[in-house]
Image (cartoon, rainbow, N blue to C red):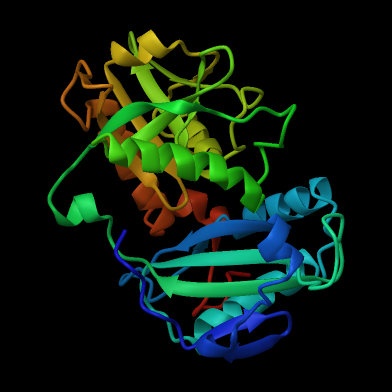
Length: 316
């Protein structure tokens, strides 16, 4: 993805500070032991409404709370306080465009051991979101390799939450895939079943069914994943099948795509050099991608409950 422009301000705890002054000590537990949990959120500008509503903010903040609870990190602020501070930060940064939002709760103690859990600081950053390099180059779908790295299990670390340490697993898989000449990676679990990509969920179309791994298979409980499942049911009348997926099923699938807040809906063209049965993006992938972007950009008022306004007052 193209590097985002630096915002003017970052929110550190309850203060709005210049970007250059948002710092964490190199000996903090966050830096030494990855004692952090976070959320990545999107907001999309609409010329029609003159606003950049934040997509499913409440669900993201609830997951942040869940991640903090499982990681035994007490959040310093309520969900309502974080929400209000985020809206204020976007306004201070004068962002009237598509953007990426990062909220990180982290242990800032610089004299503690690995079991340090306090104090917990909270950082909020908002940045313009650029296009992915392959999109800029005109590439419409991803060539994916099945990773040599195994997806971590719930017996080792909690994949369903967004704690930073989990993403070493994703980073290794993605770097290995890029080194091998692929655009992206697909990770399997200890039993050889499909889990997800390096930080985003996976769907495929197989014999006309839309299929995705179950939440008990070492995947992140993705908010975009949940959104896709709901939109397919409510808009397209398609019930997603949640089940185990064999590696070879993916190789002979009709279509496949990744989804996530940052990844959005990204078509997959091939897996391990096997071209999928339909040219990517396939019909189903195009349909759900179009619906998704209509929703996040406010063109489907029936899903307005998922949008938190920034520049406009919420409807009564």
